[in-house]
Length: 165
Image (tube, rainbow, N blue to C red; front, side):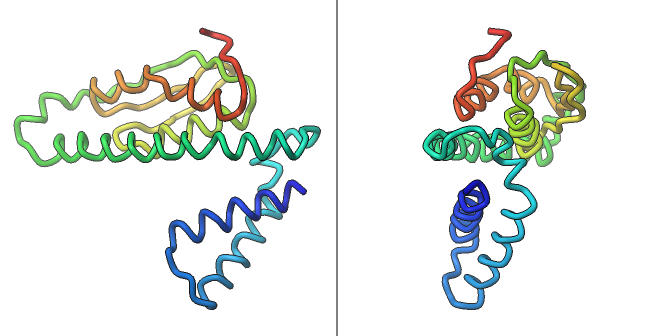
């Protein structure tokens, strides 16, 4: 059942991002989604003792997070574009590595947080060591945005309460 749920999610993402609904592309999507499902269902759903209802609820909680993340990626793109195109913006470029104490319990939640940070322009997750996350940030503004509510939103997706809040 976990493989089936992973397949459905993968196929849905394929259709949304490709936007191509002809037989050739749908076949590619099905084959790709099957491969992803077979090899990564344990990564996406590591707790195989959960009921399918709770997994479906988790999948549904991911949708608002995904929409919020896309907005954050767009906002960060404009900030990095500003830093790159305007000569006076160089004074705002202040690369730094920042260490955060994580309150997320599960590996999957930490993985989603680290990848979400890396997907956001101007930041790269460097390392997760124990309950600490190290992030490279291009400017003070991107550093401040890291202290926002991304971790709280990831915790909500996984139904966790943060241990450091």
